Every structure is written in structure tokens, then in C-alpha cells.
Image 1 (cartoon, one colour):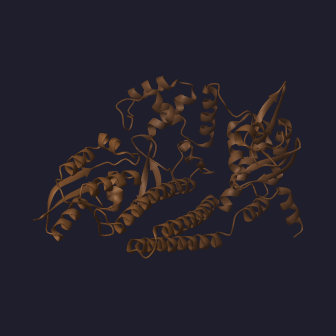
Image 2 (cartoon, helix red, strand yellow):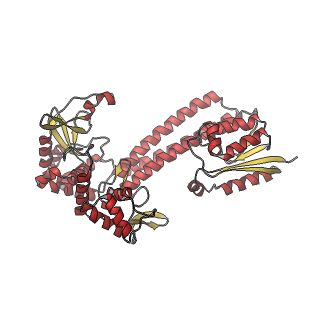
Image 3 (tube, helix red, strand yellow):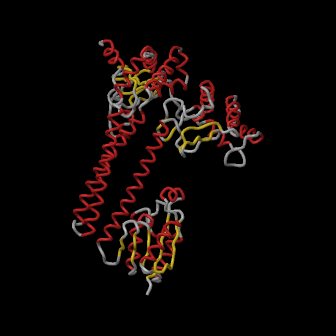
Length: 504
């Protein structure tokens, strides 16, 4: 009698299927080849064209995907003898769900064949069950790893000056060998950006602008009509000034990968108009917000008011109940911070000092890159060891409890190595071109020659991006630093660098 074979085909998205070359059709073809190899007959093909990662319980999966409902009915009716699947990940994106499928199949007396590994789980067999359980757990780990790598890739992309997602209205990407290496103006859209910018600066409302754009020759990209929200998103997108973001990552200088629709003067006018329209909330208190740092704990200080005086205080100390750590109040008058910033202009315009800051603040690039390569090789070796352990436990050479302890130790070591690798890669991605950084710092410093900078949000943002930080302790300014990496705050004081340069 021919074995009755059911085939399970599932992908989480079309993009995943294209990337891994495991479309529903590819899986069905592989399943039918397996049926032929065992002289079986295909009696059912289950198809899941879009599998969510959030499902854990069978009931939830059955409600959202008909394949799970049909599978239960066929199992209860004993309609097949073996279920073929590409890997455990296809039966459930979460290990909890995929193991429920395994239990359902084997409890009915049927078998489950997994193509990735070429093994069959039969009722009562222990070895293949271990392999299946390990594979499903590894799949979950790989999902988390892919998400981390995706986030790191997007952050590195932003630091190179490329947007992490879709190019905004007015732009289209430039492709070289299938990769987007830059952007250019979209000939049928950029006029709408300029039109909207001009009238926005003049004070036209978002709704009024949407109506004017509907009357113009510029159509929205994915809608029939312009809306209040579309226009607002456009006018609040710093991409048009050359700045791109992803989470907390932002390029420090206008990108050279695409032309900026807003020149510095226009961008300044847009920022001023945003400030005029901003509703009461939490705007920057003064032009030194984001520049003052507590020298004891390294936390950014925040503005506060006492009677008629504005001052800055240690934010960690102010919210120690929420953070679970304490510092000292460290109140510094805002006037002292203004004075410290203005007195640093001579330092910020000295290329020798800035270059020395860069030299001291970043690791040697070549040494760091070589270390990253060694770490990646180490991860590959650890993964190979985990695979070897999996085979040994399936063969019965290693006890399950010994395997679990060893695998946990290996996994912790892998996570530690990958964390170190990510930190190094992020540090390397954040390293600026020295000449560009010198020009950036000097460009921010030129505004300090006029006291008008104290009321300019544009200048404040430029100073924050330049890395200028004023360190305070005991109610006084104790030093000024250029900090290339806000997460470490280990950059030497500029005053120390001056002494080192003079001693040469």
C-alpha cells in the first residue's frame, strides 16, 4: 500500500521566499520529490502564504490560518501517514507552536519528515525529537539574530548618509549592481517639495497647503489627494536638508549621497517655522540643551527654573527614583554654560586640536577591523561545535542534560562574542572622516562669534552634532570636550590636548 504523504508549505512573506529561494512552489516541488522517493502518494498540500511570528498557541494559529484548521481535521480523520515540511520553522515561527504540531502528528500515529536534516520523527523515537526541538529553538535564535543584524545594517546605512527605508517624496534611488548607492531628484515630485516648502515658510497652514497641492501639477505618491498629515510629514522630514535617521542613529553632516532640497538658509527657515508652530510640550529649554554633562556620572543635564533663574542640573540625580541610581544635584547657571561654549571658539577652530581629538577618541581602524574578523571566525567555530553536539545527542553518545548545559554555555559565549563584535562595528561605523569632521566642527563654531546663536535652534543642533560637551561638577564648568561617542564619554579634555601639543 502506498504511503499517504501530506506536504506543508509556508513562508512568512514574499520577500523571505525570494531571498531564501523557498517559495511555496519550491517547497511543494521538494515535497513531491520526497513522496516519489518513498513510493508515496501526495494526498494533501497545506499552504501558508504569510506566517506571523507572534503566534504561540494552536487555537490562535487556527483562527488566522486555515491550513492549521485543515491539518487538525486531517489528523483526526487519519488522512495521511507522513507530513513533509522543509524545517520546523515552517510549522511554527515560535518553537512553542511548532512543537504543538509535532505532538499532534505523532500522537495520531503519523510521522513527520523534516527536509532540512533529512530525518523522520516517528512516534516513540527520542533521537529525532531532540534534533527537531533543537532545530526549532535554533530557528528562533536565528530570527532574533537577523533582526539585530538588520537594525545594525540600517544604522550603518544611516551613518553613511543613506535612508534606512523608502526614499521620501521628491527623491528616487540610484542603483549600481542592484544596490542603492545614492539618490536623485524625482522629476515629477521635487517641484511639489519646493512648492510646499516655500508656502510653509510663509506660514500657510497644512490643510491650506494640501488644498493648493491638489490644485497643482504635483500628485502625491500613493494616494489620490494630498492630506494635512502628508504635508506635515514632509515639512518635518530633515532628509530634505541632508539628514537621515533610524532610531537614535543620525548622520552628523548633510549627506553627500543625494542632493539636499533645502540649503542651510532654507533649512534654518523651516526650523524656525516649526518652532513657531510647535504646541506647548517639551521643546529645548535653551541653546545649550544637550551640551551640558554631569562630570561625575556622565549623564546629560536638564534645564530647570528656580524663581527667576534658569539653571541646569544632573538628570540622573533628578530622577534617581526612576533610574535606581543617584548622583549629586550639581546645579549650574545657564549663563556659565553660555560663557563656556563661547570661550571654546578658539579651540573649535583649531584643526590640530580637532585632529588630535579624533586620533585619541577612536581605536585604530585596521586593528579593530581585524578583531571583528577574528570574532566572526570564532562565532562560526562555536556554531559548528553546537551542531556537532546536536548530532551526538541524537545518536545517544551525549546525555540530554549534558547537552543542555554545554549548549547553554556555548550560546552564552556566542552572544558575548557577537555583542563585542557589534560594539566594534558600531564604533567603526561612527568614525567620521577626519577632514569632514574638522569642517563640521569649524562650521558649528563660526556661529559662536555672534551672540545671536543663543536663540537659534539650528546652531544648537549643529553644536550637539559636532560633539561639543560642557562638563560640570560642583556647580561649575570644569572642562569642555569634543565627544565622538556619547555612549562612552571617554574623550580627553581639550585643555589636556593643548598641553600635549605645546609640549611637542
